[in-house]
Image (cartoon, rainbow, N blue to C red; front, top):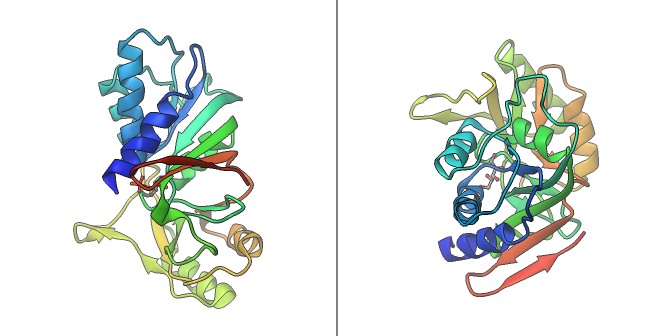
Length: 227
Ligand code: 5RP
């Protein structure tokens, strides 16, 4: 699927116009977008500093010659023109599961600022119903097992604490990730509300009503989906 990722990444880079305030996503598809955008910047495209959704994307942007906003400082923006990011699943309404790369919190903060949020995915990510991809949820480390118990009792799903290289994965924000293997999520809005009401949950990977459109590729063509 790397051809598909490259095609949507390059198509997304063409959406960028001079002076646009951008949000840069995270993941392998977003990384290809950042590279493609960097090539346009090297060719003279003039951009103000962009908002990155992870340390990895910050680093990738700097390597590509794209200046970055200090999102920890007082000059973090109130609005962006365009955010571009991948996703783990997208349904026909363009409700998304995100967070496979553990960056869902920063992604949601940045993408909520965007007047236009374009999702870049390959065909394998387009689903009728969300949930085959385990839903990532960012939680605070304090009481993480208690938070997992509450999620289990309120949603009837067995949370898995995410590990990487044999250790508990810590996000860029110092938090943990629980992956929730629902299989199918019959009512994403209700699931999102339930998760948001559980103490210890910082953010969940359901992005509902946020995407303006999706660029989808099978490796040959790019098609555009709208909600
Ligand atoms: C990171 C994300 C990514 O956008 C998602 O995991 C898709 O990644 P990739 O483009 O590598 O398939 O949500 O938190």
